[in-house]
Image (cartoon, rainbow, N blue to C red; front, side):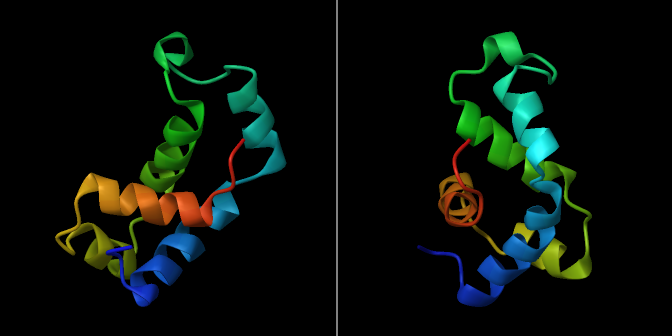
Length: 83
């Protein structure tokens, strides 16, 4: 994984509070925008959590850290369990 352990902690602290049982049920049932077009529900879910996370200075540092989307997705996979 290219994301540093410190940045992984920042990502975890940002998205874990948003990963609620209610939100998981809503996503499993397709209760989100453009659900009909989703090919990979788990990927959509973890990225929606990432985009919904409050933009703290630490999270901005991760976003500006020069990571590719694939690096961030690997980090998100480590933090967000599959639906």
